[in-house]
Image (tube, rainbow, N blue to C red; front, side, top):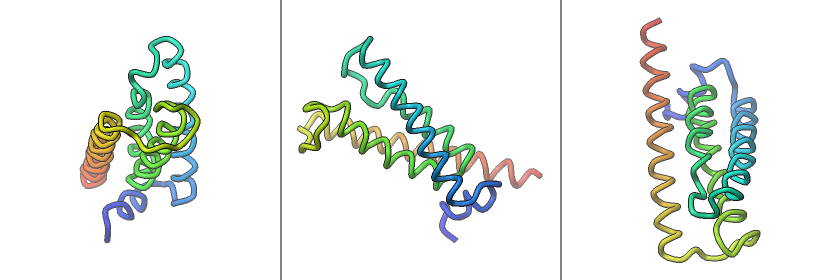
Length: 123
């Protein structure tokens, strides 16, 4: 069984609540990112999303974490990477930023999955 299905099957959440949790976590992170961008500018477009992904993965499993990653990349690409509020091809620096975020985000989902698996085995 793939790890994303095992992550949600050990959770009290099914796939629909896990996806709803992902949308809520990404929404909260987007609101925080808008607040951060007014204070710090557009220099840290993914800062608020990594904690949201970790929370989604811990509470909703790997499916919720992965769906939060997808939502985060799309929202940041549209709203927080210049030119703002349009989809355009990112330049080299922006592409590296997105790739490093995705790598660290999937690492967070994997760590949350391992934590959930370990705690489930101890019960």
